Image (cartoon, rainbow, N blue to C red; front, side, top):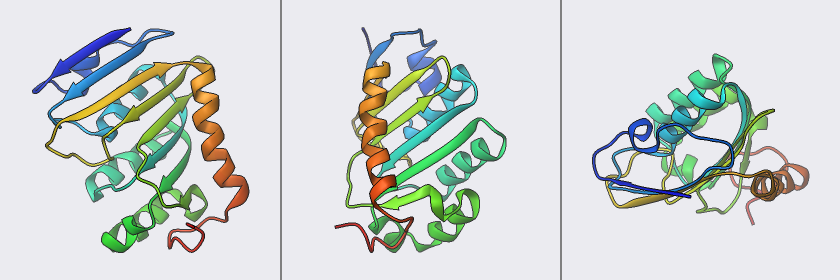
Length: 174
């Protein structure tokens, strides 16, 4: 287990290299967000399947995720988003659907922020207070390489994929 704390360091500098079986806990002052964690981890895992649960995102952060998807760093992506994300930020809906397709989304009443990143070698789970976009406040995260933890969180995502149709409007959010 590693514990890292910084008010200034970027994600890559703060976390450094990940190793199989790592369990990392970190506290920041909001100098980076979930998208920065994703980028740093993809740099180390190589192409991977990703699931992201977030309450909100910004255009810039969505564009970065779309670039990871377009260039093959993300092989497959599933988004759990709060339906209010698109009513609060309607400019995001068209952009995200254009990048990922409506089938990549399930709109559910959520405030949970987590991410899974997996491939043949890695079973990473990130649990965090961070949304996809930056928030210049005290934030925390945990990164765990664990097949058991991955199965748990991917099981949550999979349940929504089995039970709900694709949607951005929250019609199935209850």
